[in-house]
Length: 326
Image (cartoon, rainbow, N blue to C red):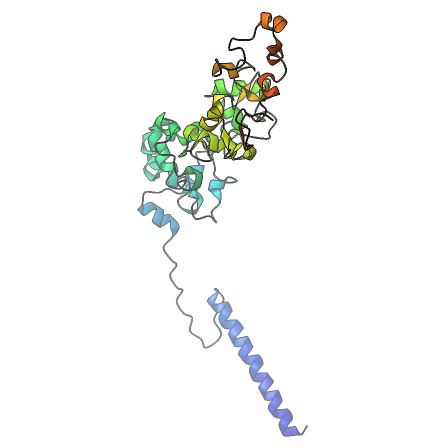
């Protein structure tokens, strides 16, 4: 390498080093440091309008102002996830639901803020359904619970939920539902019952409390039968020989929440069958002690009774299955 080439490379490296230092100095000046010598400092860019100014213009006080008096906070709850644009925290915080609170904060007058415990249930639900209006909440308006003047805060608590899921006011669904549906939850303590007590099912496994196109707020299908057969698929059919009570409704013979009879039956066999079959080839009278001692049909009063022989009671596809025999 000759002297001329060496001098050229040295000058190039010096230029690059000087340029790098100038750029770094300019960056420090833009961040608030001193500008490089000979460079006139640019006036700072005016910031965007402050959030507080925007809130004040709309009558909003801001969540920080609310926390000076109120202990309830959205932090740690689903409503406090600011990254979700549908949550109150992503909008005006507390005032997303309770309305502008500047006047309330300045005067301390509780009537100048929307308090859910002091307004109509329909108005409470109207606030909640501005966000909760999809999926299983879409049919709340006009549902059975809505028609009975219940609101979202009847069952749910935003600030002090007792359950980890659903923000319920009670520790579990069955405890919450039993506050109104005591006759139903009492059946869960009978001999034969749905496995709700054991935790395998919950009330919302079959029902949608927020509204449904089905009867009894059922989730599946449009009839009771379609709801039951969504799990009991082996009873769905269609059958060559159908049993009229089965095709009409499962609850004709079964009590879905609990019964003191086997298989959730509403009555003990054979008396359940004899509610309809009062005239048949068998003695049409109710089996009693006399028949037990003096009739060959006495075996129908114990064990599985009529279903000892008529086992395919839900329907049969056998060509000779008119009598639902096995």
